[in-house]
Amino acid sequence: MLLNPEVSMDELILQGATIITAGIDTTKSQNILLLLMLALHPDVQNNVYNELASILDEDITQVPSYEAVSSLNYLDRVIKETLRMFPVAPVLARQAYRELTVMADDGEYTIPAGTVLLTMV
Picture 1 (tube, one colour):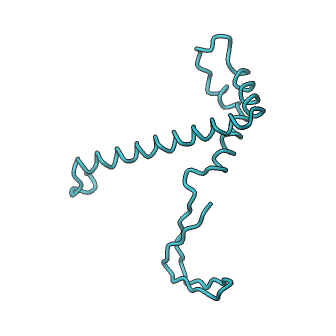
Picture 2 (cartoon, rainbow, N blue to C red; picture 1 turned 45 degrees about the vertical axis):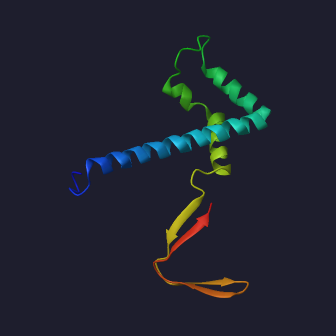
Picture 3 (cartoon, helix red, strand yellow; picture 1 turned 90 degrees about the vertical axis):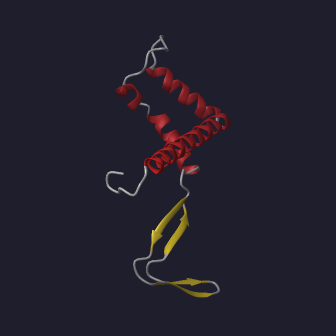
């Protein structure tokens, strides 16, 4: 709106809602996948539980400090492994900056400069 006077307030609100909704959906999906992986691997679940219990006092209503949460290395690795197995965005887009020739079993293919290429992660 400030940078582009042609953008209406309704369009701006719609874009904001889209961004928020996309963030909520991906976060929800990743949390579900993390819980599924923990349910399928009880040994990992037990290790995560023990690590969490180590930073919580007897009063579990107390919010742990930033330093305590930052020390959860095992949980961090479990989260990263879940993201590796189930990436939020499983496709990478790249643009060919020059013409490319790709060899395949059935011949050669020319990819013109400027072509957008998609690859699975």
